[in-house]
Image (cartoon, rainbow over all chains, first blue to last red; front, side):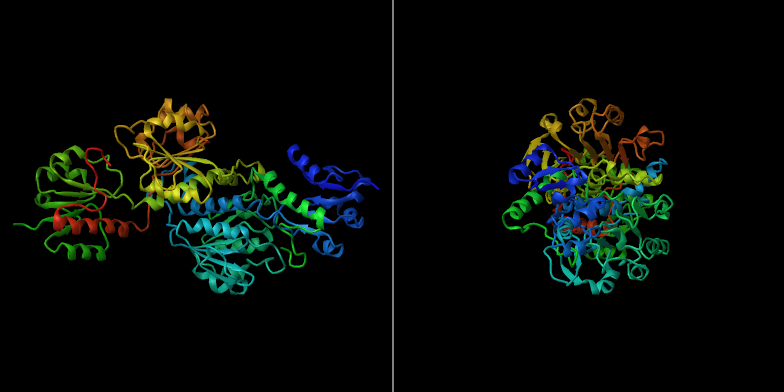
Length: 315
Length: 315
């Protein structure tokens, strides 16, 4: 019988490939596949949509280790049908996203983005800059998973008042009060800063729509580092024009890269970052920390110990 | 005898004026002075240089409560000669400056400033943005007073490695290791982020000069929220051009507003903010918290209990 393959959609440093080979001496590690090899893939690191039908048809694929935390672009139903295990990259990008969020919050509230714009025209704004104090500001974290908790812990030390939204409203460390998603509209009007970190599911697709924006405070800062399709872009644009909220800092979009003709690019009250919140220079180390733990467990008992995704809920 | 005057260089809300009058019923509170009244001023909130010679000549001025933390622009020797007490505004601006510093650190390290520049030309940088992780980065806080401590406490929760410089090298809470100012050159080369929060004194005037910049790491971020004249502007410009350091975020300058013809305005590796780090919407409340404590003590025992400045050291 041919050797089973661990296929990776991206290269890894030699040190990590050696570690994989030590854990799984009976497997081949490959980042390129010939057509004949497709049916030998048992484990996939990342997901290559090009090979999707072959990988699923072979019935040899047993486990997909996703790179990202979000798995909404993967064929979850097919995985379920074929009894394929799925684990995600939750935690790899958390620290980066928490740092990004703090940069956005303080950059906006301390007038740094405004000052940088004025710098281009040698314009010394002085105390006419728009600034506010972060201490005692109300922060709403929509999605209180790993990233949400990390953000809460960091925001706490700045004296922010932290609220959270999750599916059931279960309490979360560092968060003063949590509410179920169904209460979002009741909670929104008093919030100064609103962060979306929700995964993309049927419930969260298009969640931030025209109606929801009417519940925002006109002075609110909205930050989306979750998923692009959770926000109806055109309805956000209208809401920003009508000053239903004060500012939006967007890292993810319905269409990426953001189309050149999007009105968002030139809006005064928008900061566009090109899906960079999760970038980390330590990606390989953090990814392998998850993958190798799962690999050891998979090889001995066909189970995963870190970040297994429930295929039916999608996170 | 005429009623002594509490003179303020700036107006305060009625609630605060009433509190002053309750504490000091025998004094008049004034924000405008006739020439005849100058000699009646016993307490000055802030310092009006226009009235300097009259206020000092009268021998009735006993106490100056400065608005800012830095008192380098005040006539300290004259105050000393006339036995005038001096207290400063240290603490009023600390929280704001700590927030500003975090905005600069994360805005720079997460590529937010770069993304905002690219936004103008609808340029989606994607993962080509220049980013780095803040966790484990080495932060040097030069000046470990109230603001320095506050910054250290906040930087700690992001997993930064925090070092400090103060006059004697005395240890400071939340700071891993502190060094005396004399060791600055030895400490600088390994630091990723260097913050100047020193007061302006003979020792710190022109401290950041051509020679000192040769000790910076070429990847270092330098932030000045201390005093403008601590940095030799032209020598910093040369150092930035020669890549002796990576980036400078400057809130204070030798000349303010920064002259229109300054090369700093258009430098790629410079963020200019117009002396806004300390701005706080809660100025009056925070200032009165200091002033009223001192007023009570001054009236009963002619001493100050908060933020008294040693006139000879200047801080």
